[in-house]
Image (cartoon, rainbow, N blue to C red):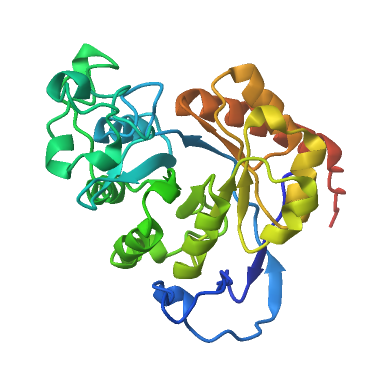
Length: 322
């Protein structure tokens, strides 16, 4: 069953969790450094809506991790997008999923002698020479790999929420701090949407140690663990907000176990409508998909059916005669 959250205070309160930040690496998030006081719980909040997170921008409709993909997500009505980030040789953060540039750019023709084409071996200036769109469709020829800064500018203009995945952070020591500094300089990303809207920002990674480091730097920002956390270990990660596993690795019992620990669960990457319907029936809080349009239709149909069930289960009010 989809969970009901708790609002603390007059409307809502996000409880910042400060996770073992050392004096040498203080939290950068101003929202996480204030004093903590006990506040009386006043009432339950409406549940957050189910969402179809638009994967890599909108990877089913445009070249992944490009500004064109962010535009496509917005045009398709997505509220939340997921992007991947890595770091260049000269310490710029760029959007890219693979650790090499070969699959989604023309790097082999532009730099034929630079194999294995690792992202971290190229400067930003070199990466900006690459075509990151024509592999997807000729209409996207000339699309470039954006920087994280450029992507945030576009997301802010489009008013989109963000799932930010840090890819292979072990290859880029200190990337968590670089990300935290960028986000701390843009206060809008440290603000929280109301409890009845999708979350403004989630930082996530398959590297759970990196997620913990990021959480220590951005204590008020919700974080997620990618991958299936073993049931016996879920209790170790209650400082996080989500566990987002591969959709093929979960069942209803696992979804319930994650939610019983107070965490949300949004599996990836689901592009088949029947599978979307299946995971919604398991009680997930949403899912990640290359096709946000299909995902939104699945959620609308699911909510419509659920609303009908709720109405049928609710006794009709007694007729009051005056």
